[in-house]
Amino acid sequence: MRNLVPIITGDPNSINSEIIAKAWKKRSLFRSTDIFLIGNYNLIKKQIKSIGIKIKINKIKFLNNQNFKKELFIYDVPLKFKNIFDVSSIEKSKYILKCFKIAIQLQRKRLVTGLINCPINKKETFGENFTGITEFIAKKEGVLGREVMLIFNKKLSVSPITTHIKIKNISKSISKKRIINNVVTINKFFFDKLKFKPKIGILGLNPHNNEFKKNSEELKIIIPAIKFLKKKRILVYGPLSPDTAFLNLKKSKFDVIIGMYHDQVLSPFKAIYKFKAINITLGIPSFIRVSPDHGVGKDIIRKNLANPESLIETIKFFDNKNVKF
Image (cartoon, rainbow, N blue to C red; front, side, top):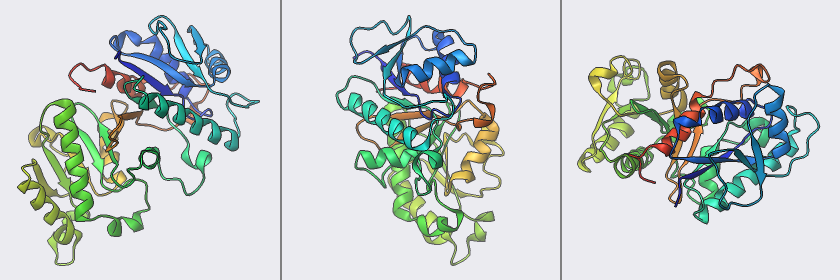
């Protein structure tokens, strides 16, 4: 099967059309991978035109023998809109869900290699109780609770044990079982897809690991999980003190650092790698889902300031000949 990857265009009220157009301009960086969009043709065309970027786009209703190298094709999805950057929440919610449905169907038919989705304002689109696309995809595929968020860079990746939950709920949401599941899933991904066993550092939850006090999560949950994983011959180390874990990465040579909550690992990681990172959903047995590791950029819409690097990195991930799909 050819290396063909759909890009779900994501939130209409965003910089997504801009980063897509800029990534397409640099398609020489991903020569082995063909891409096409899943979204509304008229909307995307008008948005790209409004920021003064000229590219050749065309719409399709099915995948055939299109030449994906010469023009950017859009698998057209219906959408009602008046203002091209102010689509109502009701309309964009139905639209985004439809785009995901099409992408997953194409994946199940094995017509595409994986899927990429551009950023989405989750609260505006799906309401207050929505968590994240990682969990959304897992629920759709019937594996909710087994999904793993990996923020990936060739030099270092990070993963939070808990993802989109409130800080006050973190302690009661981590468990020995959850840590073991996440580490095993990450280790398998690196071994199966990237062909090596990763060196994995696991952070404690508390400042200075709460000095390993009797009732600390480190002593009750994290250390027992690490001991179990070591018996499985997985290269795990820790618990590392969260305040110093990112200080000397050249010396520690970790491939992955796992934290107990979202910002514990994503904040230092983004400070180091900025747009040179992608979000990969692991634990989905049928396909790999990847997305840029940033938001919708509402403050810079139409200003032609959006950085396409993270989207380019998502496409290059599928273009990597050393990764097995």
